[in-house]
Image 1: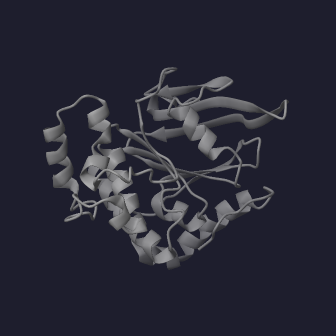
Image 2: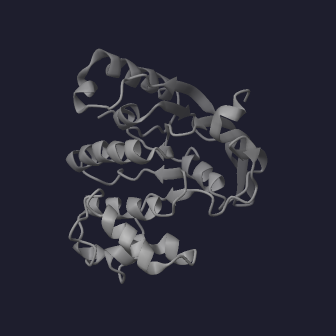
Length: 264
């Protein structure tokens, strides 16, 4: 891509294949995308097209067969620990209290635990967890568990965050509330966020830019810049401009078989 210097994260012509029953199965077929610093970029596409595989490559859990991952215009091969990554499940440890769960990143990196806990306690109200720092995950609602997992990701202190369908398992009312809350937190910290969802409306509401992937083997079918003003308001979802962005994304998805994308 020609605009590499403006990209905080750039995926450049990435290919990935696995062997299934002894046969090669191509998952990613030349995926390229760019996320500028401090922007919110969403990736949508049919189920099984390779979105989570792409995140696994970006965070360094896997390497591409071909292609490059660049941070700030520089190719980086050893990427483990370079970004904050929240997978689809919250993965809170049931035997640890909320406060002990959210400081796992600083603890693993050998930071001062007392300092990490003070910072985490200060952030509990912002993350809707005030009064629950000493609770166990079993006492939390689904939405609260997701907020705790996001706080844990934020406390890794990385300026690039990968969020893989963090609200996918929640009911519509809870999901809408968490979308608005996530935008408030993001606008405060201005991390660069890469976000996966199956929900077209969520993609439009949250994003500066949306990449639509094709069915496997995935390629970028369309790049859509969302020019709605910020801060975003829920009333925007009823406007003709919002509907036009949704239509663009749906048109890009409609030729992809096995697409399971929500339009609500």
